Image (tube, rainbow, N blue to C red; front, side):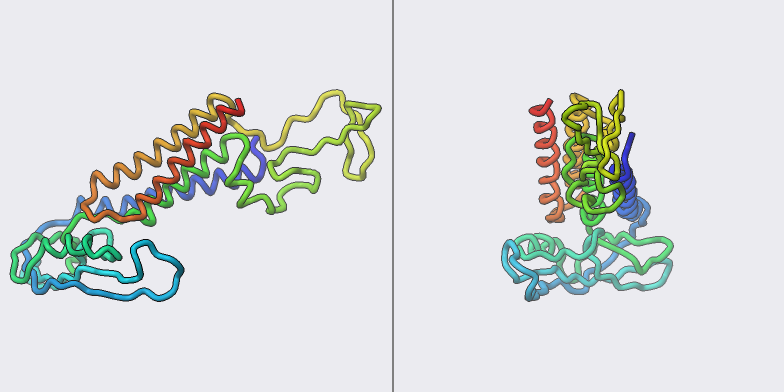
Length: 266
C-alpha cells in the first residue's frame, strides 16, 4: 500500500499537473477567444536595461525589450496597447532575439490587434506563449508522479525524507527496519528493543505500485510527456521562444535516465 510520503508526493504531483494545466489553459483561452481588430503602430523602439545581482546569467546582464505602442478602436472607443506578446513581455539578454520582434513593426504601420471582448483594454500582437509557469509546473508534476509510483525514489527522498510521518524505526523510503535476533531468524525488535517472534514477515510499508517493466514504462511515459509538452509549446508559439522550455527539456533526460536505471536494477 502507499505510505504517507508517497501519498503526499502523489497528491502534490496531481496538484502541480492541475495547476500547470490551468495556467496553460488561460493562455489557450486568450489565444482562441480574443477577437481581432485593426490597429496602428504609434512607436517601436528598443528598450535596454541592466540587471544587477542574482548570480551568473547566460548571455550577460544587458537585457533588451522591444517596446511597441499601438492604438486600436473597439466599438467606437479608442485604446492604447503595449503588450507585444500573448505570454508577457519579450525580455531577453540576446539583442538579436529582441531585434527580431522589433523588426516586425514600424511606426505608422497598420497591424492586427487581438483583444479581449470582455475587457478590450487587454490586447496583444503576437501569439508567443509563456512556458513558465504552466509548462514548468506540468513537467515537475510528471517527474514527481513518476517518483511517487516507482521504486527507489529520489525526489521524494530528497524533499520529504525528514517529514516525521512514521515511527523512528522506519527508513526514509518508508520500509520498516527489521532487526533479526541471531537465534531466531523470524524475530524483530519491538519499540522497546525486545524481540517479538513472527511467523510471517509483515507487508512492506510504502511499497511502490509500479515495479520492473511497469516502472520502466512509467519513466518512459514521463520523459515522452515532458518532451511532448515542450514540442507542443514550440509548435503553437511564435519565436523568440520562452527559454524556460529549453531548460525544461532536461527533465525529459532525467526521466529517461531513471527508466534506464530501473532496467539495470531489474
